[in-house]
Amino acid sequence: MKLIIESGATKTDWCAIFSDGSVRRIKSEGINLTLTQGDAFDQLLRKAVAALNPSGESISEVHCYAAGLVQPRTSGNIEYASDLLGAARAVCGHKPGITAILGTGSNSCLYDGENIVRNVRSGGFILGDEGSAACLGKMFLSDYLKGLVPAEVAEPFGAAFKADYMTVVENVYKKDAPSRYLGSFSPWILEWYGKNDYVTALVQDNFRRFIERALSRYETDKYPVGIVGSFGYVCRDIFREVAEPYGISISEIVEAPIEGLLKYHKD
Image (tube, rainbow, N blue to C red):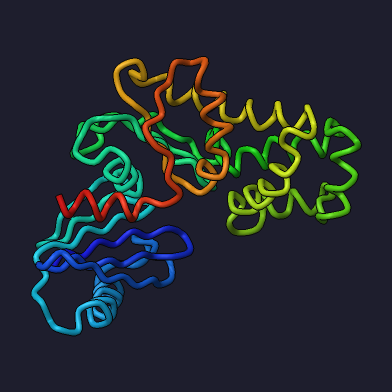
């Protein structure tokens, strides 16, 4: 049996591939492997294996993909790898290519068919994360607080959210998960896409900045680009439209990597 673990901030997908090719799955809360290590992780692993593998088939491989892991490592038959490597294996398989994560945050890499060989640093929501839901929220809130958002958008936004200056500053600079807070406004903003010129330009500029500051640093004329992430998936038609003038070939855009990872580890 092979066990594939793909964990984000809020949920974890556990998938078992059995010797006969069948697959079983369960979900659990998200795992932060910088905080959940040693005995704590072993306990989660045993619990998941008991639920997935009641017949007791022996485990040959475990592949764990999680955010926050910069350097992949192996311990026994367990491979620990970053969510970025998981995304690359999901959309590129065993072929080389460029991969982007477009979710609450963003990231990108050049992948050789097995491992990441180059990574343009994201910088996080303060220094980067261009193209992400958090960056779109940050751009919009910055304009909103400065009175730069057109009234037809600013007025309903103010009615829908408590977004006065002090509330925004407290959530961004003092509370936990500021990136998630900024990204939470993106669904509302996207409702105005195509209906208001300011919002349409803002959404396109967010993706344009990601292309120019991250994707264009790779050989996009040589390799296709695969994208993973809920924000990128929701905006897939917009992203393709923005990317076209740059001559970027988009191989696929998927909401989550788990299906691609199952295929990668089955092959």
